[in-house]
Image: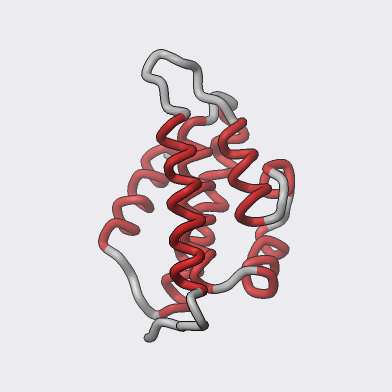
Length: 132
């Protein structure tokens, strides 16, 4: 278990995720219908794939993408984006797909890094509650 440090890459990644979180929070309006526009931007900007890619990719291809194209530090944020997108989705089928992919990635990153956060177990419980 360890943290990789490559000349400010963690700081740069943290700043980029901060930008995304500000974008997400700024777009939250209590009485508005949930919108996938914010998530479209997040997928394109931070993970270089479209939202449609994540909706249609197989589990095996998603894990392959995570292993080959993402840094290990990016996998958990992707899982959380998928989870929040799924929780906000009004389409039940999309919700199920996104939540299952989020669960897959959360379990994968815990296994891959041999570390966990207690909040991840809360996220998994939330996902399981929605899937039941």
